[in-house]
Length: 353
Ligand SMILES: C=CC1=C(C)c2cc3[nH]c(cc4nc(cc5[nH]c(cc1n2)c(C)c5CCC(=O)O)C(CCC(=O)O)=C4C)c(C)c3C=C
Ligand SMILES: [Fe+2]
Ligand SMILES: [Fe+2]
Image (cartoon, rainbow, N blue to C red; front, side, top):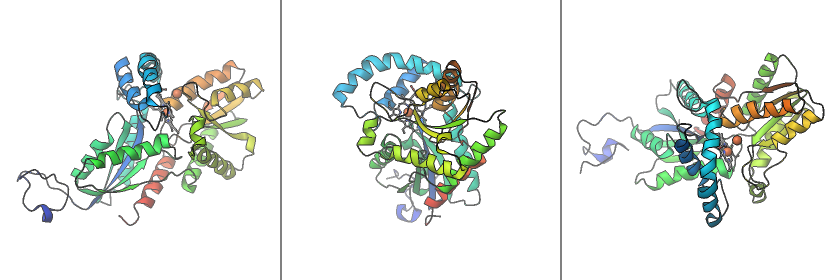
């Protein structure tokens, strides 16, 4: 019976491991950062695989399967892969041949690991909810390193069932297949954490100081959700509003200078409003000449910020009469961004490390 995996202490497994088994450091704690996911390439089939996995998630699309299946397989997966692939092509990290979301998530994980260099019991890793590296593969890898406890950090400051909950579901699904599970913690959202609010304020002020204009209005644009999810009790809408209110208070700005909007709607349903694109056009029509958009709900820059906000919405603003436009980068792996992740992780690791 030499089938034991290196999952726990030698005392209980005795000498059942193969003699050439690599040394295992027991009693370790794993931190797993989990972001949304991203296609492996921009061609039709890579895009289709990614979109199919994403849009088959019942936490993302709550329409009954009998209705959704023909729409997804018949219409969406025949046209959207091409269209979205072209959009990804405009922001693709050509050097590493991957999407910016993946590059930045990896860097966040590596920098966070660096802050635990003096704490050899902690391993930091990263995974994607859709695509690669998968959650199950990284949980297995952490366990193989000797992690008996794992902190999962869904990389979303505001909780939504379509993002945070589906990460946690996938983690528990991986654990369902394990005989010997690690102990698990999942990090809560940090939409009102003072470290996060301060990071947003510092980053915004720094980027505004680098511009050659002062925006009359700054939009805080969050990813949208169908309005029906809010009505079913999802706290996401409230979390977004609270983040912006706290940021506005921290900056000491009046209400109409820092506003909430929702972007990236999909399909025909009503989504959370006001919509970012319509607001951008309306502001320009109303005579606003200088506009900036920041995206506090995105931990890393991605398609939705680099293409939809910086490119598309910049064009909308100029076409409707606006003159100066800026997209503020996400916190990413900046010192402020890393301070937020460190604060979230160190708080949740209390009692474990
Ligand atoms: C169709 C339903 C969708 C819901 C609900 C949804 C919620 C949601 N998404 C994010 C964050 C991201 N979404 C991203 C891309 C993206 N989102 C959807 C659909 C829904 N999202 C699609 C189909 C796509 C793929 C791109 C496209 O075809 O338009 C991304 C970017 C990923 C990248 O690789 O860059 C992020 C990030 C949140 C936070 C959220 C709910 C709060
Ligand atoms: Fe999305
Ligand atoms: Fe989008």
